[in-house]
Length: 266
Image 1: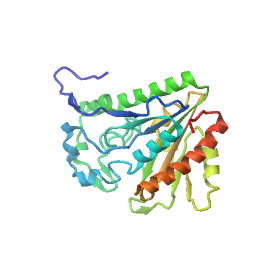
Image 2: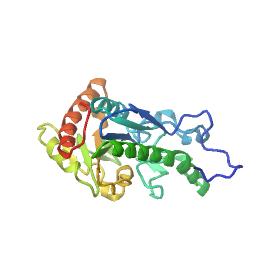
Image 3: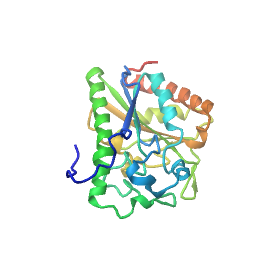
């Protein structure tokens, strides 16, 4: 529900794409996958936030390769996947709305003209029309999963750039967690048995710094365990790369999920 007056034009046009999409909506497993930074679209009314299409196609606009990886994992686990429809630069669905990076004015040294000098109404529109509908959809799918399964897993999928703010990131994959370590701890242990993988523990970000809103928002549901997974973007450049990671992650996730009592479809 929005808080706009009748005189306030909506952020999204009536014929514009929705703020999220379902993939495999009838998935039967006890897993709900989310891809918060899947795409780089911007509402027409924001005119690309003043950025070129080339800039929006970089890592600051979306998590490159993550949507394709998430879809493959959803197929293998027979899980529902929620895909964010708009760029993280419009509003970051994985940050609290009052977080300083919720609507960033710059990202990795790039200025975001369309995010400067926003009024309270401007920010409210982005929350009401994009952030809230997405998280209501996530909550609905989690509720549905909890009605059909004794234990449920929420897996938040991301990808990260090999270098950020001038700093190299050596990890191939990162497992992120805040308060709930029921999935992250065994998943870290399992992945670290892979001899050629550099696995980050709360890397390249520390989820304890309020950088994982999507999983934190539901951590009071006892039967629900959460984890964030980050894969480095230069390792997701080809179809073969994505398939390799999907196979690897599915194998490790299946073992970990089974150990916690979550049913999967593979």
